[in-house]
Amino acid sequence: MHFDDGQVPAEYSKHIRRKLFFIFAGIFLTAAMLIISIGMGPVSISAPETLFTLLGDTISRRFDLIIWNIRLPQALTALVAGAGLSVSGAVMQAILRNPLGSPFTLGISHAAAFGAAVSVMLLDLGTMASSNVGAVTINSPYMTTAIAFGFSLIATFAIIAISRLRRATPEVMVLTGVALGALFTAGTMFLQYFADDVQLAAMVFWTFGDVARATWTELGIISVVTAAAYIWFTLNRWNFNAIEAGDETAKGLGVKVEQIRLTGMLLASLVTSVIVSFLGIIGFVGLVCPHMVRRLIGDDYRFLLPASCILGAVLLLAADTAARLMLAPNVLPVSVLTAFLGAPIFIWLIIKGNK
Image: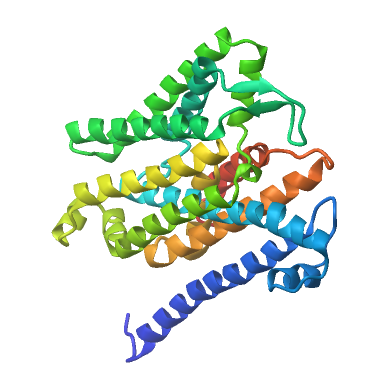
């Protein structure tokens, strides 16, 4: 086929513009969704009132307290957590060259749940107390978070250590993650069997992922870790593209495949560990969002990484907003909604393929 001069660059420019349009449209949608989410709740706040309050104008002391102390940190946590889980899933799928790669399927979330169960069972951190959140209270949430985070890292290092013994093949890392997920799930069930009523309720309460748990401090920690990892992911976007073409091809292009794979796995797991240890288990975001983005703009990681962040942020924020309103005045944990939505969406993506 013959191409006139300039025809291929013109087609390529159109191809790039479509991807950039998707990203900028996603940024606009994210900003609009943030304003809408902050305004919705038991106390309805209009979009102009929300925007003026965020810009520093004091319309109402009541609105200031609701927005700055309750809704804004929750909404921003949903954005950052959704972006972190989604981009971690995209990176895991790239470096493992496996569409099932995600923090949830590799057992990292299950390891965190086991760590929380250990803290509740052995340190007796769960009590019954009537509050506006629920009937179960974790006495020392930071201790529970630290232990959950520690077990998440144990799972991550176990996957990396075993993969190094087998030269870091993607199949070994995925199978190791699946096995560890089953192991930690069995350990959690074992502890739940011997737990009393209060301990059992505390364990179940922690596993429900909920972005409302985070304060400004937790939001800051999650944001710093996610931003640092994203910078490294962005700097290695061309390496991810090369690995997608195959290990031999990537090595022929000078990519240090094993080093990129292990470092990327460690950073993606670190982001997931921090998010899960503070918020609980939020499944399917890291698995579904990268696949949805691939269907829309392709596999080029120059665009896939930012687009995955945006879609993950919007999806989790929208799910959290819907979870707050579905059973009002009761609040449904966002993890319940993402699980219900994530499974059928993923099955639909598999059936539709690239159509």
